[in-house]
Length: 104
Image (cartoon, rainbow, N blue to C red; front, top):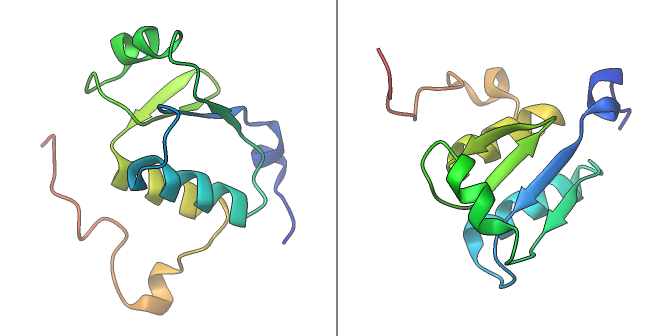
């Protein structure tokens, strides 16, 4: 799989605690399986500051070039689109059909 120029310049960090739990593991696995380079921040001393900056004040959080993305499903969708893992047209569904609208 060829990396696009945009993907190779992105700085991606997964922020979560140092234990295996599906919320973060699915994100780590998705990035790893697509050969997308990322940092894995499990440093519990730095996590309270990340939580303060997080949109929902919770972890896991994906940091992309300094911007934070919250909520596992949203992050998984974002990472899937980075590597074109999920072809929405082939599946016959709309990309955000399963997501409730948070904002009108």
